[in-house]
Length: 225
Image (cartoon, rainbow, N blue to C red):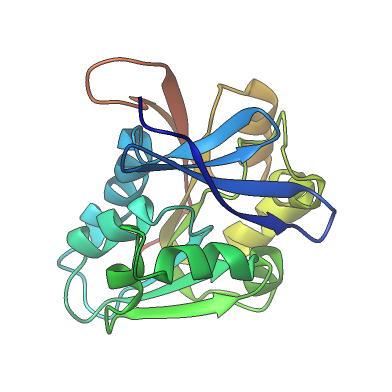
């Protein structure tokens, strides 16, 4: 049996400690004993990038925001789905997560971060949204398990009315924001509708053949691009 390797830890601004593990060629980030993400199960993250970006493939001058780098599956799916003149701003709060992905010995998202369409920002995505009124055609947010339960307290504002309104305001007319969530949350869905977004709920498996279904909330702003 191959050992479970503890590779590194990172501490979020609110004190939450995340740990990077490797086992038999796969990677996982854990909070205590809870696995937050894994390279073994990422279909719903792939679909997050595809649902948000495939409709924009032929549009000129597309601007996309990816909030939360994770292991880069959403970013890679977005890049596969977009045209050559698109621009993708990736916002990641934790320097360690960027370092893990760029590490030459880890088979993660280092290559995607080198794509000329990508701009990496080390920042709080809430701050980037507030300063980006009317900028983006698509916003992809996967910074926590969803509105409830949160694993990192500092993310709470993103899933409340103020944060949702900031995301809606950062969209161009006709743009859409897509949130990844571990579970269905009717309270969060109602909050999206209060921000005058047209809401679609999409359920996707974590793994192609089995496993739990995650939820993608697609909120569309009225108008034409």
